[in-house]
Image (cartoon, rainbow, N blue to C red):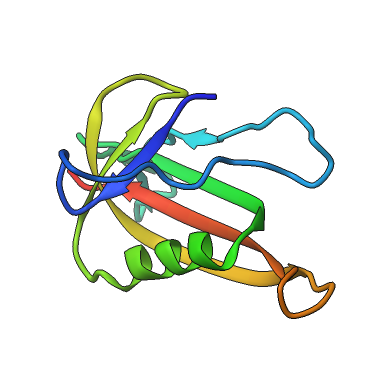
Length: 128
């Protein structure tokens, strides 16, 4: 399984927890590469589009069955209020500068105090 890295620098960072699901299905890491377009209506009723010169990419990462320590690592990353370095080896080995624009987590399975697992979702957006 390819590693995904997210941290303050490009070196000396640990990989994110492996993506895994309770059902054991094949993982998917969607990458949104939508264009940024502004639509404007003119006085004569015509429509004009302004295409931005930069189109930042977005990634949605989701986990199930996270351990307490793995969730704590993700929470720590979310608490950094600055851009981070991201490498998604599922896609390529390019380092990208990103920000966390969304993060949520929930208890996934609670079978006692030592068997609690979590699901989490993190949305990243490329900084240009």
